[in-house]
Image 1 (cartoon, each protein chain N blue to C red):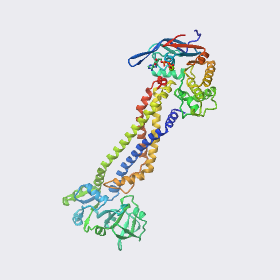
Image 2: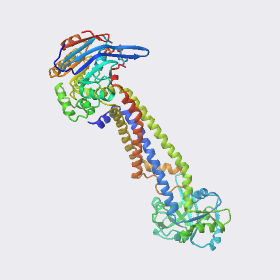
Image 3: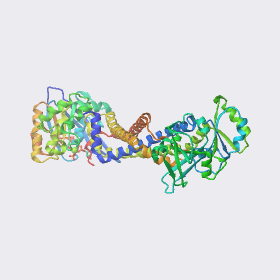
Image 4: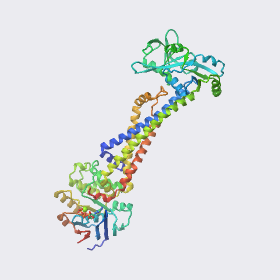
Length: 225
Length: 391
Ligand SMILES: Nc1ncnc2c1ncn2[C@@H]1O[C@H](COP(=O)(O)OP(=O)(O)OP(=O)(O)O)[C@@H](O)[C@H]1O
Ligand SMILES: [Mg+2]
């Protein structure tokens, strides 16, 4: 696959091993992957094949055991915790299966949280815009408990985008949703993708994966296709 | 919404737990405020009532340690120790004496135990010794069964000059001849009787509790003290009012230690409470902190957030505690008075002033913040990866 522009995230021969007692688990066994700006990729594979670990590497959540990781043109392979936090803050947004919404804060306040840590004063306005975009413009003052699962995941997506990252990483974002809500989230992703956002989404759902522009198939810590 | 808002929200999320933590902080704050106020108030009251305002420079008592003398003079009761009135004759040769007041003092509790009246038998020398004692109404002893009331007693007993007043403990009725102006000293809470009457009431004719002396020249106080000590037999005790005050405070010292130990204990309990609840909360919110790290929160941000949560509870606890201490201080005053042994001042002793309230609030907040350091550090160490960990 070729791209005329520099990739926003790049893994070069990345190896990641975990120690579990005396046993060594090889979660990634030499993975190379480029994520182009504006690309929509679905990561699929059996449980334990290393999908989440791959996403962690892209999202600067952890450092690799071997190989190199570049995000936003920055080599973060040996970056310290502070530098990784910096990259996470501005370059990537995360969406997980769990929502991590603060129940005592309104939808708008929840969506603003990442802006708080980025000391981003425009956070509130941006959060409101994004909530409008994900279709919750009239629910800003509601509390998470008043929303459906699909709506909560929309808040999470708005929250992930509040610092305007170029890359959205989603680990089974529809895992907790019924098929109707899952379809809705997928449509939202597609529209965000059309808006120029790069998305890497882990999913077990082959239908949803088929709608992404590219499928990354994983098996035993390696990329098959 | 800012860090403080986020912290405040987190406090609201576990209401009961936060409330209990705040209550424990408030308890520590009340204890500290009351103890500090009592510590200062007691010393000030002793200094005011026994030393600076008593008008007395020296006391002559019989035998015993200064503390015994202090209890006799200050607290009343009927002490077995007494000074024979004959001692007065010996003082004739001593110079520098302005006023010599032989007096007798005793306290009697009513049979139902609800109140204790302090009676003191005095001579006209009192007026010379205490020119500041003025009559609000009426005047000095005259006629049959006269009694003079301290300002507070007159108010409590609702008596005016000319009224009769009956004491069940003495089975005697007196006639109010004078009511003193308020002095904010121990006089306010006393009943004054002619010395002989008072001696007869407790069958102590010719016997005195002590002799109070006012000197002419305070600069020569030490010389006069020596002179008196040389003059009187070894079983007499001559003591300056400063020594009396110091003696009372020495005795109060042990009470003080107990008080401050109590404060330290309440603080320890409160600190353990904070650390424990905070650690619990952090364990529960582990994945949330990890999530915050995913969105770019640094270790410092998380530390700040957790410290703010605890600091806010500290501020609320300190405020609640300070207010409670102010409101409840009369209650504490009453309880504490009952357990004071040596000398019970008449004026308020537990009256937290602005300085005390602010100082304890500051200390409470600082201690709360200190207690949050370990939990905050634990929270800050949580790695962003933990967000994906299935429990
Ligand atoms: N922190 C860790 N410590 C030890 N082993 C780990 C850790 N994280 C992942 N692993 C192991 O690495 C391998 C890959 O895990 P990973 O979570 O990437 O799989 P996955 O493809 O996301 O699976 P699933 O579809 O179940 O989410 C697994 O064998 C897993 O047990
Ligand atoms: Mg996974």
